[in-house]
Image 1 (spheres, helix red, strand yellow):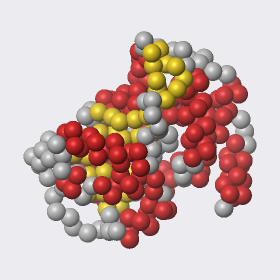
Image 2 (spheres, helix red, strand yellow):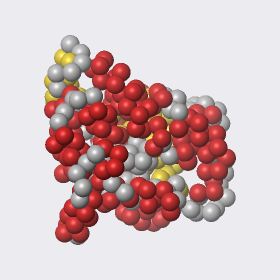
Image 3 (cartoon, one colour):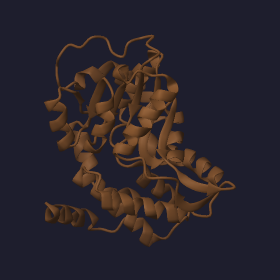
Image 4 (cartoon, one colour):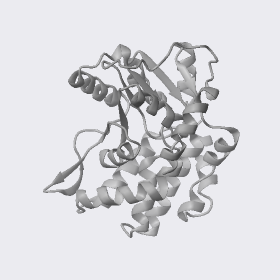
Length: 287
């Protein structure tokens, strides 16, 4: 897989992307069983949003119509171009996904998730972030994904990357069939911090010795919980906050990759032309 194949090479070169340039003590600390690592998913571990890539795979399998695909493409174009997690767009994406999977079996979606990972997600894993996760694993520490994406999707990605597990948004199911409703709230913002705090308590971890990684200012509550916060491919607000609090910064978006990420997903998913221009125009109007 793309993520797995590049991990070793990325591990050797990830230090070249360090923005601070300061020499740091060895981290993670080998053999520290009170430490663990928590990774955001979208734009931290993987380019783009997992939910949108999952939607592409479901469209390919005739789960929904072309008009819904255009909607997914618009949301992905916004996510890439604006570089922010807009609550309105994220809510719309969640509602779309819930309506699409309603009536389908959980086991069916898990199987399809494995296929979609190979088709759309594996090649979008950031090698540098993958190397950071592997460093924690090599040190004997547990590593979790913590994401607002569906927990089933997050679990597939965590398993394929060899991570310990995943925390994610939970969709209600009865007798193994999705109802189209959520269990609780999406795992986003402060809810991530609470989930990490609860997991740390259950696992007997010392959060001051743990690390957390994210690209988004929405995850500042989670990052602030741990002793080793990292801003990965940070948005403007997180970059400013990280510098103010002397958090570690790493950016794996080279000029070439940044340009690629800035392009809409239209070519890949057959979206309507003009979605990019519309996303840019809307972003400008909201400033």
